[in-house]
Image (cartoon, rainbow, N blue to C red; front, side):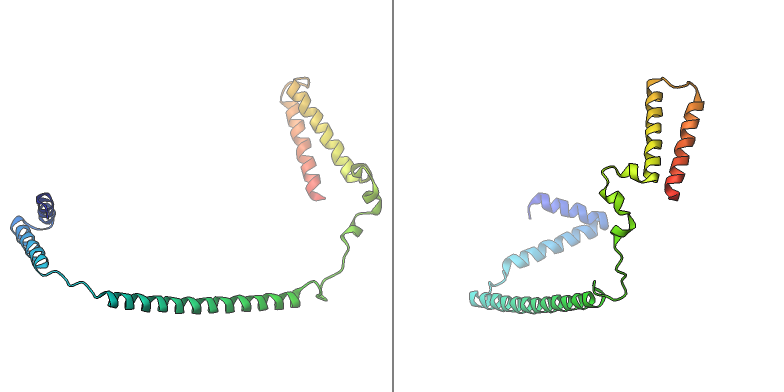
Length: 168
């Protein structure tokens, strides 16, 4: 180790133990480093490394094949279950009523060019919206009555229309 690294190690050890114990621990670490430098580890044989790599590759390939087989089986089982559910609960089920949604609205309205004029409720709501729009424009332009009376009346009408709309 470099001198600065030795100093940093001593400072670190002194944070956890008193100074004489920290110095002794530092000496033990230096002795261990000298021992490791004196007796380096032998390098493994190249053939042994190649054999280990081959065994690891074969094991990984085997695990990959098994995982692919399991995933494929699960996908096939899921497809069979989905098809069975579609067959049981599908559109050919006898429980469903065969109601035509077109029959709800009279044919005269479908053939008309102005649906709001043919349906009384839509005509009523369209006229109310037109009146409210005119009042809002008048209020914005300052042409309407001054004071809070016009605003209160406007708000009351709007609330009544909303209540009528949601009641059906």
